Image (tube, rainbow, N blue to C red; front, side, top):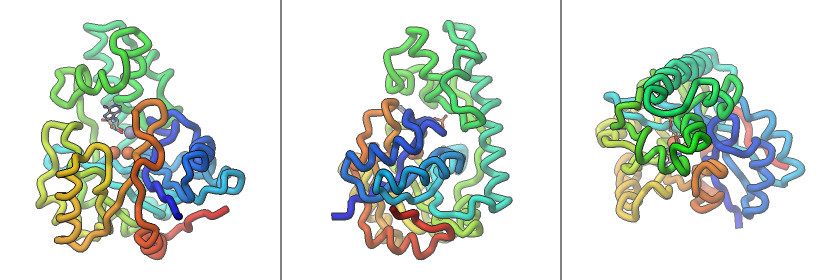
Length: 282
Ligand code: AMP
Ligand code: ZN
Ligand code: FE
Ligand code: FE
């Protein structure tokens, strides 16, 4: 049995395990292949690669690109792209920079009402990494304001909260084309995760992404209800997209368990054919 979990996060973004640790945890969970898809950065790739041989787990190198369409957040997985592609690198740099400005703004708003400072938040964020709401949440938890990240996301940092601020992000359709130009394979992450945000991307945006070269769409994901999973599969069928499943594991920051959803090895074989960098095998 080949168990492939293609979408996970390390402490290089907002997960809590180091990239090399993640592969060993993957082995423990019975995975044969794991995708490292930190938000807006390739920074964990080398460390993850260093653990392929010792863990026996193959590595799909990827990134989860924060995008937007009509002001609505969209997450695009980019698999096996050239990590030196100038335009892709510059878009990710711009996003990380805007994330920092935005996090400062959120913390400024919060600090009027809660005992949290910018330096508190920085201690939870990766160095030069993409700073996000999870790191602000960690500082709020430390200050005793909330119990866990889930509570923070349900209250103070939900998208409709007065403390919430957006960051710059590339347009989702442009990002699909950009991932293809960088030799990568674009897959739409959890498009129907309605618990995360007030508005979902319209289905017409998914049509446009498919037109721009989208390869697949996540269907099996814990933020999708059974009904959503069926709907996502219907969309995949209609647009000729491959069906993906993943854990979107984040370590102790979220309840998601490695391997709780997986992707068909035949889909991953096709993905590998279309990518630029290799899947790294033990
Ligand atoms: P941001 O990109 O800074 O707006 O924050 C979004 C990130 O927070 C995503 O990567 C999610 O994985 C994470 N996230 C979203 N909802 C939750 C939640 N309920 N608990 C923990 N993390 C969450
Ligand atoms: Zn995340
Ligand atoms: Fe995501
Ligand atoms: Fe994710």
